[in-house]
Length: 423
Length: 207
Image (cartoon, rainbow over all chains, first blue to last red; front, side, top):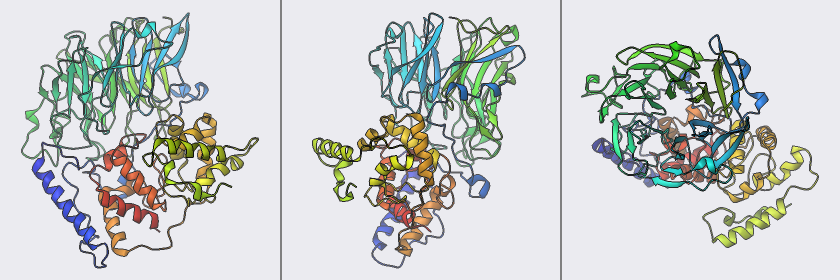
């Protein structure tokens, strides 16, 4: 049994409780009279990821949705169903990359794509006006995160950060990634990582909570940063459940990050959050407080939401707000300048699915959210996904890429007279 | 047909020295390689039946029954074998040359095989009741369905082989079998090895 140190006493009690049950069970095996009454299920141990999962028919229909393992053939992509605002165009940028997840652009225009259910990092290579997909690393474990700086590709696996120097000069036969940092927990739950390099030239690494709703220890529920050589690890944000996207406001360099709310509290709350980090060490409340104003029914006792940094905006119930970037390009209309594009992967823990789109988030002068508007929709059809957006990334020409792990594809959104992407 | 008694434990990684495992795997592969010219999925599947049983029900230890398995789950597993995301030498070899369409054809076919039947022995009532309480507690019946027939990417468990169920749960728990996603590793964290044995006992017999 895993011990989460913030709740040692209750967990030890739970452990003792289970120990008794287990020994009781073992002792009774040869004999017939059952010692423990099986009809009444014992309470879940504190910290169990299953806490809050209700009995009942409607809730019993909900289960995490898994993407098909095989990338969709280009002619099977749902492109015709996807909708963008008037004046924008959407095209398939690259396909055939099973479980395409996070995006990063190289200096020479190569687009790197991480994955979660497979072992690969892909590169969309632009050469002589033609695009092709190469595999630049394989045999990795949940290599969800990619980042790029000064010729070097950084890859985040479940519990390890590695790099490949001069990657764009070696796309045909890149060397194996070199590990730079692996002082990370190995938990599967919320263990896959988005990474990005901040304006301080440090690599930011989220470490999610190891379950749906748990009192985590000091190694979880946070965002860290490290120097690009792996040294100097430092926790910058606390009380983070599972952030899978962040970026820095180009105007004041403040870090904004998405965080996914807990499951099973209800259909409509808590909502996912858009958070802003204004100083190192801020606590965003998980698991004591959700969406800034809902004390957790179990862990919230003895705490107040006012102890924690509130979100700057709410991203929708179970929406799975993941990748996000500020738009700094010149291609889109001026009203999109410094807008945040957020990919919402879409809910599973809700009867009527929510999200499965890309929204544009406009900020007030004080940095809080002013409006959230749909930008790319059409992935949700009859309460089923035909695609699921994971990350967004602005290309140098000002167009926007969107990854879709359901279909293993990346789309490109441009504005104005449609023309094929050139780089 | 290859006699099933020739499949020793050593085809399973972790048992026995590497050299012996490789030898036996090679032997098995040589014997069960797809017959030349086999066209229909039924003909090609004869190879699968050698270990997995002809009527959806496996008679081979630690080897799953395939009957009535959810096609999307089977597709994910075959894909993971092909990509070596799930490690089992024999299946990795079998799936190595499969095209995407092969994967789909076989997973759809697997779903049409007759469901395995529960063990004749109804099980010790106390143990069955104990496991049922665990099922309620850990909400196995949420994703795997109230009759354990599974749904979509979540596998059928009902009347699967007891040894295979227990082995699989142990491997998810200690992370030696990597799931397609994190769900089972997470769910099994608080479940003890003894409880896993009870759950497997129950699921093999559930009616």
